[in-house]
Structure formats: structure tokens, C-alpha cells
Image (cartoon, rainbow over all chains, first blue to last red; front, side, top):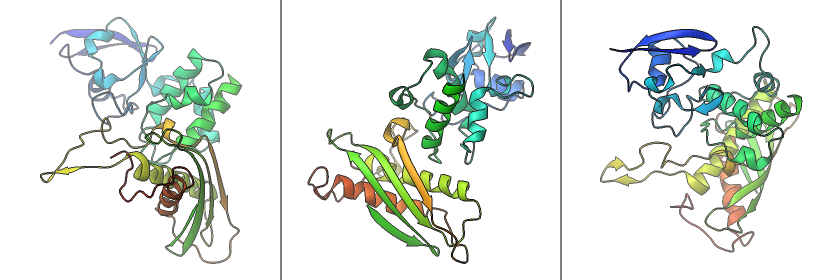
Length: 151
Length: 139
């Protein structure tokens, strides 16, 4: 199988994988990075949401070959050492997670949002498609607003 | 609004709904009051009730399954349309009544009152002057 080299959370990694292996399985099974979660496998639930060159992607529908030479960031790469990203800190402050399964994806989506707009409106937040089966949506909304105010 | 008692706990839910588009109503605001007897983890209880609200909204407005010749037709979150952010209210208040005694349960305490409140808000002349008897409304 071919090798694919990319930057993962600031470090160079190489995986031996078929070209069409979903990035999610390269991350989880070959590299042991389990923050991105498997939910639907068809890019709908968004539990796996991560960043590619700073933009939101769904690794379950992204081929590993497509990220060669590029920079992938998962929830594991968000904090600066022991200092949480403002969105992570807002999540802690607002007690957002319940079961927690979708939350890495929710946070990575939320981080990508203020990168596009400094003051996310309710309409901007309404456009988020990530599913939360515990129904934490209201606290997610509050945490995004709090984080945006501090960024 | 609606009221529900279960597992030695009680709660009431008041919702405001925008049914201008009858096919795509949106709950704009919800106020929940709960008496769990004794709240051991009030923030956790609030979260559980917010989750119950989301479940109630989903059950009444958007999320259902079809059994088709014995098999479930829906295959993923693509067509099982559990509430997304856009289906949930941007304003939610949860009030926990002061402790009065032994703790009750709160597992799915918030679901029936929230579901009934959404159905009532949509139904009894409040918003559409209709009386739906099948849920979710989008089926």
C-alpha cells in the first residue's frame, strides 16, 4: 500500500493505507487519534468534524490520499499546551457536554465559525448541522457566544 | 404549556412557537420549571431538562421512523431528522424549585411536558387552529 504523509496537530505523520481509506480510520485506527468520533460514516452527523488547513472537514468522507502534504487538526491539537482554546474553555465554563460523544465535532465546528465571522449571530449558529442526541444545543449556542466575545 | 409528573418529580414547560410556516414551525423560547424533590446536581439537572426539551421538539415536529414491511425505512441522520441547532429555541430558561425532601428521578422527566407543550402551542388555536393527531408533524 502507498504511504501518505501529512501534518497532524503540528507533527508530520506517515500512514501506509489504500488511497481511498477514509481519513477517520487513518486517524483512529492507524494513528490512535480518537477525538474525532464515528457516527454515521456519510458526513451527516458530523461527530468526526476536524480541520484541514484550518477549514472544517468531515474525515469520514475525506480520503486519506486527499490530505497528503496538508495540515490536519483534530480536537487533540486545539489547545496550546495546557491552555485551552477559548471555545474549549467556554465549553467547560458552560457545562456543555452530556454524554460527550458529539462534542469534539461540535467544538471543532464552533472553532471554525468565529474564524469566519467575529460575532456569530443566532442565524450563523442555526446553520450548524452537527447532531447532538443528548440535545445540548442551547448550551452549545451560549458557549459559542461566550467564546466569540472573548476571542 | 404542559405539566408532567414521573419518578417522584414534576415539571412544567411553557413554549413559544412560530408557526408562520406551518410546514416548518420553530420553537423560539422555552421556560421549564422542575421540582425534583432534591437536586443533587442542579446544573446537570438543567442540562437533562434541556435535553428533554430537544427530544420533545424532535418527537412532535421532525423526528420519526417508518416501519416498512417490518424494516425501518430511515437509514441515518440524513432522514431521521432529530433536531439540529436550527430546530431548537435560542432562548431557554430552566428553574429548579428549592429542595423539599427526598430526591426524585430526572432521566426523561423533561420529555413529555416539552412534547405536549410544543403540540399544544402548535395546535389549540394558539398558532394554527388545528388539532394534529399524528406525530411528528412533518410525516
